Image (tube, rainbow, N blue to C red):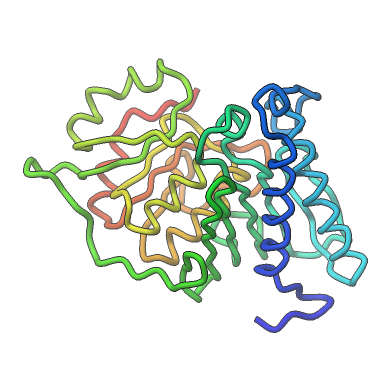
Length: 281
């Protein structure tokens, strides 16, 4: 993509943001420093000092883009909807997806940034996820493929399955034990093994890279958590469905709507994961 004042080089913008966020986290090396609560964000979660600092760094970059001539609307977990001149572009931001992990100095935790030219997941045209503890970077352009650290992702068709036919390794996201307990029986028939990473964006990127064979939330997710990563999965050849919506990619890019999400490398895998008793409470 050729960058202009009105059409920024979003990959370069996100790269600068990731460098700044990793430096900021290095300046808060202990759990006691990272765990300070400074308020509650527009998305409803408690805001940690590192969440606030991350968002300030991101919005400084967005303000510079707008001053240079770019117009867009930002949607962020902490600040909500911020108008930078309006227009069709939406920038959907989760400053730290997996902030509990970041607070505890656990991996993974990631910055997630998506750019869309419409109001739903289907309209996302650019996605960027950087795992901040290790530095791996996933990115994708709509119709242009998915990339890991700048190299095109090439995943063999299909997925790995156990001898019983279950998906060999499935990533699940469920912060609450009761949601896991309510899905155990169903998971036994669908997944041979499960992993819980604590970051929805990171989990989806593992599917994009072929490291897991499916991903399911056991509750509802917001657009800020997955807008970027769902495009990365789709551009890697995978499939994504927001199961509370009439169409698989109709989930709105806002802070209000929430939907369970399933993702897989094949239609068969997606259908199997969609049978899980995903909580909509």
